[in-house]
Each structure stands twice: as C-alpha cells, then as structure tokens.
Image (cartoon, rainbow, N blue to C red):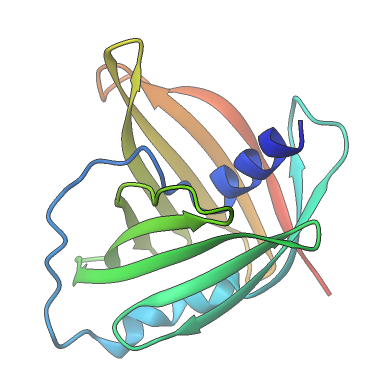
Length: 175
C-alpha cells in the first residue's frame, strides 16, 4: 500500500512515466521566463483526492534550476520519492512546452520522457501507456486557482478524443 501511495502521489504531482519517447531537442537559448511557472511547485503540499483515499497525503518539493534543466526532489512522508526533471523545449502562443521525466528513489530505471504544456493557469501533462497491448493516452490537467492551490484531473483515452477521468482532487500548499 505504501508503494501505491508513493506512485499515486508522484502521478498526481507530475505524471512523468509511461510517456512517449519523443525527440528531446532543446535549443541552447531558453527563455528565462520558461522557468518561472515551474517554481510554483516548490514547497509543502497536501493532496485531497476526490475519491479512493479518505486521508489527505502530504509531500514536499525542493525545486531549483540547475542550468538548462529544472528539477524538483519530491519528499513523500519524510523520505525521498523521486527527482522530477523538466526540460523547456519551446514557446507556444499561450505559454511554454516542456519534456519531463522522473528518477524514482530506490535505483529503479528512469521513466520515459513525457510532455507538459503550460498555458496560463492550465498545465497539461500527457503521455502514452499500454493496457494489455492496447495503446492508451493519458493526461493530467492541473488547474492553478492561485499560487497555493491546484485542482487536478487524471484521464485516459483509447482514441485521443473521448476522455474518462480516473482520479481527481485538489492540492493545497501547506504554510
């Protein structure tokens, strides 16, 4: 059960594994503003899911820009859980696009690179997975309702058009 809670927490905060292995090209010159929204993750958070779990879970992110990359070490119930890595890859008309992945504590192999698109208060993580040989598309839509609150909905689709929400809830910054 502890492993499931860790996976759930990582899934909610930054669903970074089981993603497509798209090209990771990034230009040498990255707009400094691309790092600004990522700084919102830094700090202590409490996750209140809308279903499944009755007790909120807590985690902490220690985030920093390391050069081209932006990283957040996630600490889940007092223990290192994962190092989440963001790589800015471009500017869109309304925001920024990134590649992201996670290195999970415990020497497990790193996950595939996923995609994050930030457009204002709406952040969409997307990746692909496999369900008994069938390709499944996933997305986690995080909607910031201020710098201290995020509503999330994790959904899956078999066709990329029809989405079924499988988890949701809210994250609140703990002061």
